[in-house]
Length: 297
Image (cartoon, rainbow, N blue to C red; front, side):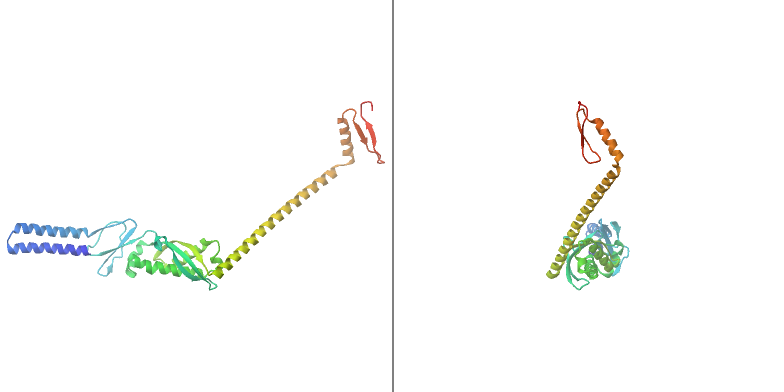
């Protein structure tokens, strides 16, 4: 708007010079030329102030004399009221807090135990909502302070209040981050879009932290002992199966060793013996007889 006022002042100055040349009557040609040059510069400045270029990832809100244009200007070239003020806002993903830092927030669990969380989020300002946000809250910095900061703090406290201390310190931190993201979005409503929430660290009073660590150690020990018990049980099961298999094999063998089969096997083996072999022949009385096969025995 300052440039537009300067352009108007320049045009008026050119008109005054033109009027002065007509009144005095001296050097009218040169004075008229100067007046035209000044007025042309003023018109050019006014025309330049009527065209704006919105960069990629930005929107612009136009407002004049307390009235906000409800149609935001997206990226590109636009013709606007030269006397209007232009407020630019980013619609890219932004981090809060900026610069890769974290917001430290104290909250209470469902057991009324205090914990401190280090949280950061990614968010976007919805381009179509920028005129309303500017009218209600102000500039982008004011929007960040009014919506993002309060939504993050209230959302974290709301999410933590519904969870126990054990759930807060569980290894699955992604689930906690998802709950916090949903709570922040609920507090922000549709004024901004929460892209993702990150839980960097969680701190608790020393006594609570020590108790949690001891409980986790006990749980790990119980899990390890359970695993070893399962290994022992599996080995015992394998040995039982192996013994059962041996017993079944022995039963099959014993059932198959009939007197007729043994006599047949005995005769078959006698035929395979070389000449001169000594054979012990069992008798019914239990006295072994010796027999020499071949070799004149």
